[in-house]
Length: 200
Image 1 (cartoon, rainbow, N blue to C red):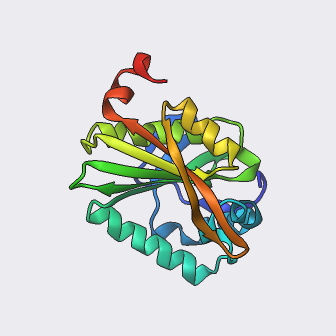
Image 2 (image 1 turned 90 degrees about the vertical axis):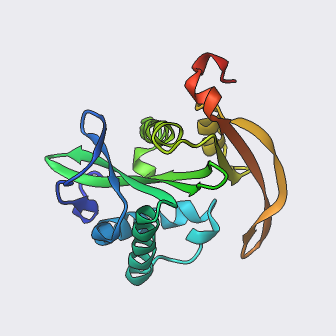
């Protein structure tokens, strides 16, 4: 992955800096080629945990997905971002974070994934924390939820690290081709995020 040019993107016109050589960029159709290649590289790994990833990605499907994300960003119902890393003078996509927004309930649901070669570098936790800052700051949300497959220990550990509380297990809530699986639900309140000392 480190030497693969297929996930490179042009220098972003707008980005949110997370640290040296790491930024969040809007996840729109302009990223189609690089984002599609990132999905291809991680297809088998993502398919273990995500029903949407079971079918191999297609360029047309990826473009359609990113176009929809762009429209949702414009109408305020989603904050879709990709994680980009500067390597050898080029920006590469390495992951994704999305926040679906329910403005009426002042709540949201967050999801994320990272390229397998970049696991364990705290890139996702840093990116999700930045999105949560936006959720509980500018967007004025009061609650954010996170759902993941019960067996996805990496995702569950990240949720706990960021202060999410486990709120219950939804039995057979996720439909995979080979059967249904349990899903665990986590919740985080704005008051908890603003007061780190009060987080679990």
